[in-house]
Length: 257
Image 1 (spheres, helix red, strand yellow):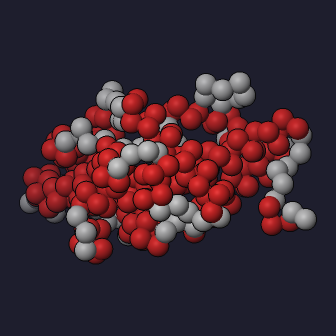
Image 2 (image 1 turned 135 degrees about the vertical axis):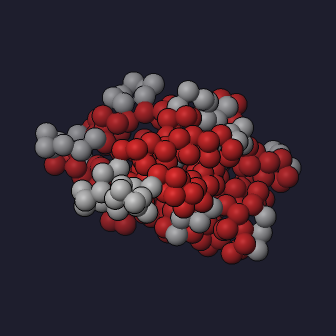
């Protein structure tokens, strides 16, 4: 890794870590709309790698790869900031999906199937699955979820700090519990997709190989899992806002008489 003069060999670093750039790019693709090209991510990531090679100082207690991952990922995200992540029409349709998930879950006491959701939305199953593919990049929380209501903004409601009172801390903890409960309630295949993607850091193609399905099918499962979690988190968040306005913690269903 070092030249004859005892300094880091930047050319060798770029050659060795170029595959890391591609891996990070393909891993990010599940969070991005279909309009984003992986080649653009790789190009921005290579700029981040070059920046890491120039800025890294050996002997500071950090491994180069750890430092490079941060710079690569940051460069990719910087290159995306000025682009639309998901078309407004797709966001609107996914809000319909989330509403249908909540309604059917209340009716049946379980997570609805794809067929049930397609029927509730009055669309063929193929069209529903196509919508899930188009919704790639639909995040658990988007900027639209952080404001626009008659209450304070989402980030203000859930920011942490020493000034928070016990009730605010209780509401924030309740939301975390809701998210964990939502993940546990996911259908097994969707739960596995989330685990492989977020814990094992596999990309869509690699997850498809594990499950024996296509990359596009993994994308659909990921989008549907996000929709289920959004329905749980944002639906529960509405209850939290109501409880906060009334000055009392939300009722725990487990303790209901």
